[in-house]
Length: 251
Image (tube, rainbow, N blue to C red):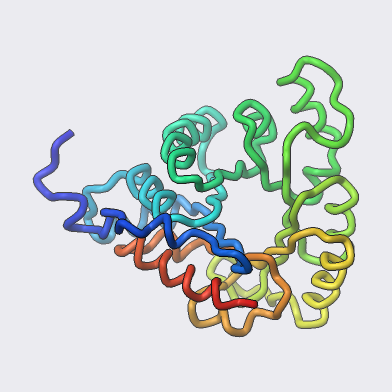
């Protein structure tokens, strides 16, 4: 549908010619964005944007993060799959990995990685979901690549033992998504960092990570996950470029 206001007049949605050239360089940390639909709806409404949420998410993917975790607890499974299939073509074109949040059956159906909680990777119902899609009994390891969100050394150990390919530790800083909850302390972070290093499993950081807190991040993380503020950017490409510059400076 044609609109009287150009989308590019509201956002910087035109990819610079070097956008994909700003992709991860050797030795840089991995950049993963997380969708947060309530924050996105609020932002687009506040500025009276002509963009649909899907338009925004396509631009976010095209800006060149390593991955986007498609988190959408508000959607039914059908709505989630519809959104996924709208975003997959651009993700494949630009080489941004889409990560499924929780929906194991969709991860298997579309051959995509999934982000799970510790109970999900331990729960036998996860195996049952996989079996219902494949039509035969599934044996570990799981028939899809998955990472696990953890909050302690014990959870990291459980996730690794169940075959997780990466771990995500949070939250590391005060976060709008977890108001009033204390972040992980330095000792907790160090314990999980040492475990991840000893077991050769990438450990990513999440929670309250932004341009101001990034410099306080303990050394040793393989990457970062950024959520709410990724849904509030008028210059999406400039935002991703700034993260790339920060992350590539990490030894």
